[in-house]
Image (cartoon, rainbow, N blue to C red; front, top):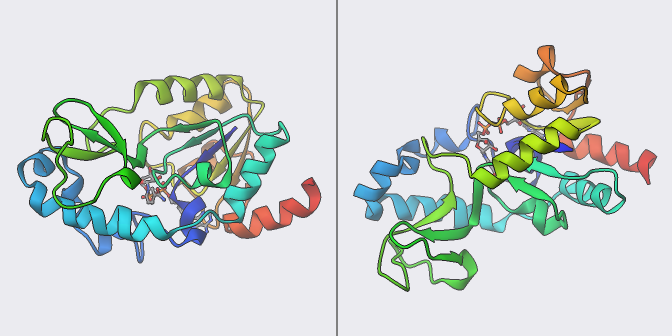
Length: 226
Ligand code: NAD
């Protein structure tokens, strides 16, 4: 299995949320607070649109997304548990993707649960449901929201079965997602981490640390794997 964080998409042009040049050095994270969003949709939606649709929307899969999809095709990688919401694993061709934090390409009505994809709607703001006029929200989790149950259960099951867990570009700071590689290790998996920096996983969970960017490491692996 593979477990991916924001780092796998950095070379697609999407910065991480924390650290230097990160998204939250430019924008106020309060826009992803559910109560704030519900009370001030006119203030939240334009910023959400700018970050997650105008900006994220331009990103394309990179070498790491592509090789992961190919590894699935070859039967080597069984599934990807991703914390990312950018849809880039699916765009690269990965099929078995468990989205721990949801997906920005889907929209959900907070009143009636009606679901639509972002391509289907005119992102005029703030978004109102075409069925009931309720407030529409991106279908990724905001601060304090629960992890989608099916993704959570599928991820745990994958972690319990995995022989090898690849961790790519994750700090290990976001809970409960960070439990997944730990669960894999507890159940006997070999843990291989790809990250230019050390993470919270590096000392306690990782067996093999390939210290480089996802693009550089996967370009090198490609020469030996196929
Ligand atoms: P994170 O836990 O996702 O960590 C980012 C990690 O990526 C860091 O450890 C960093 O060293 C590593 N990294 C940076 N460049 C890399 C590269 N080129 N190759 C490999 N690794 C690289 O931390 P976060 O950014 O604070 O994210 C918090 C949460 O928000 C996570 O759930 C994350 O997935 C989500 N998020 C998603 C996106 C996205 O959908 N693309 C973007 C930002 C954050």
